[in-house]
Length: 327
Image (cartoon, rainbow, N blue to C red):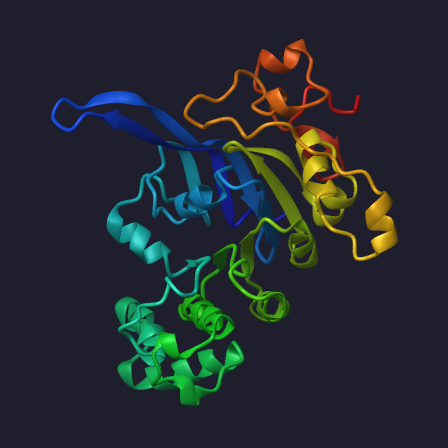
């Protein structure tokens, strides 16, 4: 088997809290990402799902080194980004790009579309200046926009068009990996389908590796090869999209899957929804043992004693639950 293009080894991203303006003192630590081990193969689409606040976006920014890693290792094609200097990380960004959630905030309102797409080409010096206009035209056509829009500003576009521009900017350097942080959540449903189909087509056309972050599991199932489920900074289940969504093993994944609406009204009226009690615990003071045990209907005493590791739960399948196979 080929080596993974991206590896995360026990990655942690913590944020210290302080109190006081003059005499600052420690007030705790937010454990946003608290021990993630993961590998992604070339050309794979990995879906990353979980409740708001579980650490998905923080993990995405840690992968790109937009946030410093507290502990652990991020390897991109064998290169250790966590120990790399600023110049090495900047060079690595040619291979690692991001599509942000909000197309209204991720584009510079003072730059035309042409300048937005040409900037990464100039900064990284990937081609002579005279070739930039042709490359920018090709980028626009690749994401389904007419080159005549190049002299317009972001406020002149709809949300879907802006997200296409953001996708074109991410593809400008022909990266090997793109991290998409909920790229369709701010768009209308009909536009979401267009953007999803665009991303899926680009992955096939460019042999692109995509990490796709979303709340909507039906969307993730549509586009992903594998799915990783996060809860309070950790991955609790990992496997193929079909396995995780159709045959979930972890109690938390089962609750997420039960919330997916069914288009058949007769089935929707009769099916049982698993409602989790309470709110997710605070990442400042997470529970002992399995972080999910205060909300789990199947929790037993040993769930409070130690953090369960990801263990095999079938072919190409892992889950972190001490009662795996019992429930």
